[in-house]
Length: 252
Image 1 (cartoon, rainbow, N blue to C red):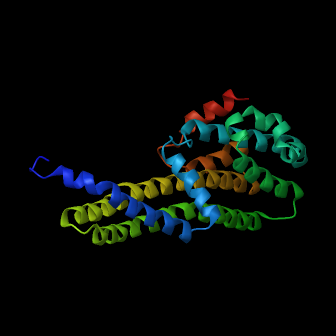
Image 2 (spheres, helix red, strand yellow):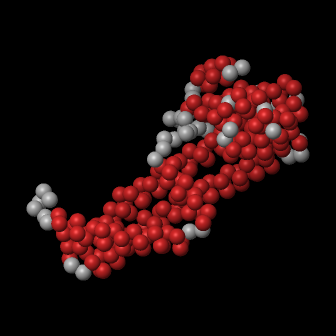
Image 3 (cartoon, rainbow, N blue to C red):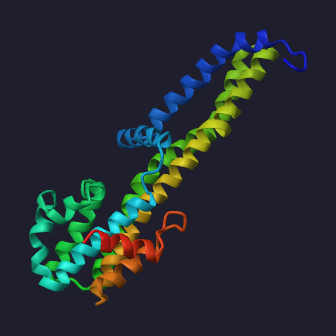
């Protein structure tokens, strides 16, 4: 408009070009992905418009929970946490930290490996291998939504060209090309990038749990074990040694 262009041409072509690009993109997206990936993508897109739940406060609560569990096991023996592991929803330890204690994925990950530690049939290297495999599987599942969005972003400029060819007139054809590129690099790809960052944040929580439990298995005291876990967190979300120590002592 500022350069004296005729905006009416753009507005007239916009609905038809959007219908052509949007319809082709939607159909290709459905055809290109399994139902579980479609569901994960919809869930992931919703998360993109929410703040991250992986905050310093959450990590301090997680490590305080791990500290309490390991401290109880150290003082009273591994068998003392068997009831907590078998029924975490009735466990005073898990319910003391409601944010992470009611997170299904976190609780399941912790209790599964505590159960193995209680059984005493596996050494730390075997459990580490199992943890790595589970974390990798979780990462791949979560990353499937990111890959789906990246593929869609790569296809949108081509759909824009298709819509441009169907547009007929030069003005409307250019609208289709413009829309395809704008949707790809201005919306879908940035959303895919944001979702990928959220996936990495979720994986870091599992890495923290893994490092803490393995340090405990190798004989380190609970206070030292959670320090191992603290060190793997991203610097922006990582509590300081003093902050974590004060939080753990305050929760006793």
